[in-house]
Length: 195
Image (cartoon, rainbow, N blue to C red; front, side, top):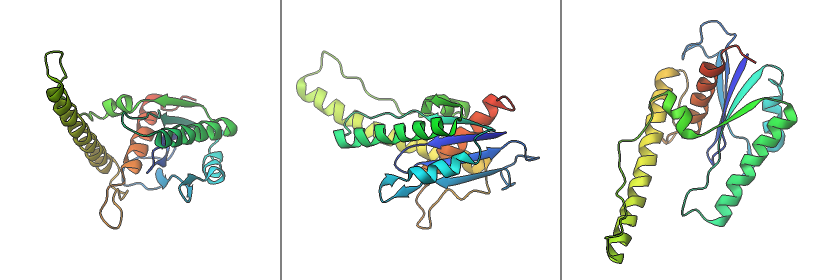
């Protein structure tokens, strides 16, 4: 059986774990692989995504991360997120693969990924200037929290799958890869040999 994790973000990836390979370990590269989300320019390459997934159509369970538009993102960004999310669901449906939509918090909880950064609360007692400053601080801390969670995700993925390089040649983190492989591992833990 195959377990697939799909991170459909802008730096998304598709991760595949073959649980029928003996000794699924982070160093047994026959048991897993991760690929960047195929693109043509900045658009998802639907044909390539279909060809990647079709190979596993009769033997896979898939965990697809739910798409979410964050406050402050523009209309174009929100449209692109929704479009890409729909493309992935359409391809999965066309291939005939069962899939579960999971929130980031759900799969992150499985691996103990969270942030200790607490956000200040805006209260009625605050003046307009205080509310404005509080909201600025909240935005700054949200970005910091997101960065912390991404770093923890990569760290845990590196520990579980040391055979995968989670950095680009320039040293940037491939957080799409770490998220996808951790979702595939979440899928393996949840579904084992169930189909």
